[in-house]
Amino acid sequence: MEGKRKWWKSGMAAVLGIAAATVLVHLAVGWRYGFDRDELMALEDARHLAWGYVQYPPMTAFFGWVALKLFGTSLGGFRFFAALVQALALLLVGMMAEELGGEKWAQTTAALAGVPFCLGAGALMQYISFDYVCWVVVAWGMVKVAAEEVNLRFRSRLARGEWLGASENTPAAERRNTKFETRNTTEGGVWWVVVGAGIGLGMLAKYTMGLLVAGVVVGVLATPLRRHLRSGWLWAGVALSLAIFFPNFLWEWRHGFVSADFLRFLHERDVREGVTKGFLVGQLEVTMLATPLAAVGLWFCFGREEGKPYRVLGWMYVVPLALLVVFQGREYYLAPAYPLLYAAGAVWVERKWRIENGKNIGAKRWLRRGIWVALAVDVVVAAGVALPIAPVNSRWWKMAAKVDTVFPEEIGWEEFTQSVAEVWGRLPESERVRAAILAGNYGEIGALNLYGERLGLPRAISGVDSSWERGYGAYVPETLVVVGYPRELLENYFASCEVGGRVWNKYGVANEETVEDPEIFVCRGRKGNWEEFWKAVRKYA
Image 1 (cartoon, rainbow, N blue to C red):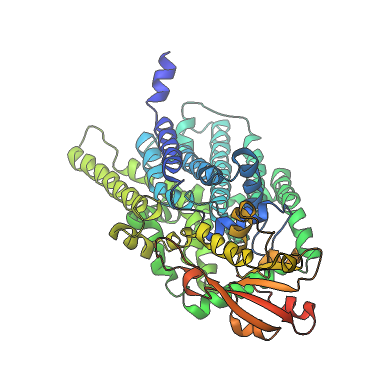
Image 2 (image 1 turned 135 degrees about the vertical axis):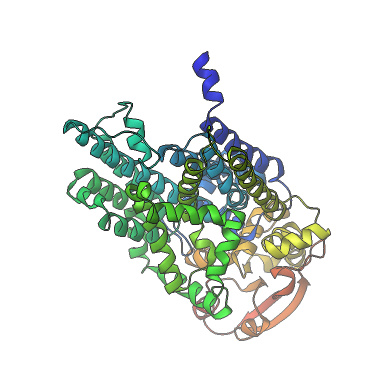
């Protein structure tokens, strides 16, 4: 009983409580508003399981499929796994801090620093959520590898008859081993398998995992960890990562590496529209008031003697940062690299401002409390703008929607489907036999195929991303009900395109559906070859 009571007072118990609280918060508010456009894409893809998709690797769709099997089309249920993996990321951050030698304050602080992004990334079923946790898994594995390297060196010194007294400047793993808490010498090698699994799974979540791989490679080559290049465990980790990723690579090869074309289009669009210009400044938005903690973590890895064994972690941040600056990435692409810095920074602060008998105890205590206050402010602000809490169209909601632009895209999908159903219902029954519904983006086709069945609609088709790859069905349509495409394009291929309705939502919220191509067309009298038209409606989004 004493051990149990002691554990419940530990840092990891506090971290577990924080992680569990985020899941409960997501479950409590996740049912509000509606599906986001990206979630409708994942939901549509979940009904067509494959080893790859035009717009992303298969992990998000797979978890969407599992969610559909377990919870049906429940909005809160569909978002469950995103919330769960973000909570797992917080647990791993606390475990990293513990492995680096941090005690309760450091573990709790590192987890608190990760909560704001957890609230945002766990609020929606999206690939960012799974990409994030995979980066953290890799970072945790590398912390374990580095820690075991420290243990090995310490055991070597003991074997030579040397005694290393514990001090403030002694690396955490060595200080623990002054108590002779030695472990199996093969354990460090095993952690390469964890790193390999994290990398392989990360490549199934989002291809930006390649940036972290570059950081790991540079970190290994630039530190004493390069001796592991002769270890079979490292190469077992490499083999495992390739084996996990191989089915998706094979899918890409069979589809002409279509995702590379998609990502090229996406990057060119982002650069053209200027959304990549504020990358460095955007890091302040990603880290908020935890920025100093992350900076201290980076300094710990590169500027402190006790951080030298963990310098690989610094490279795992610096290399992706440099690559994203050079290739003009979006600011949130680097978000998964910060948890390792939070852990390192919290450990150093705890060690530097340890509250013991001596000078400035009061100042140290207030400084540490001040850090918690700052992180708590981050959590409150993030919750206010990332969680679906505010009443739609309230002043709070409008402010939050300017920061988190996904909110307007969660409104009006049932009304959208109802509008299309009304146009479809006015078609003569004899015409519907050879008619189809064509949607212009992945949110629209996802909504139509989610809500349309109970309204008597057929499965919609679309030219966007993987939906185009799935084709247009068993027959060539003679009549099309079209939404999300401009009239100019449609009139090039049909003799008549008349407006049958217009998209709206009951809140009057301006979003892509109500602002961009909101007319619903009925197109008849196809001109030319259908295959030419089908190629013309293909697009990336």
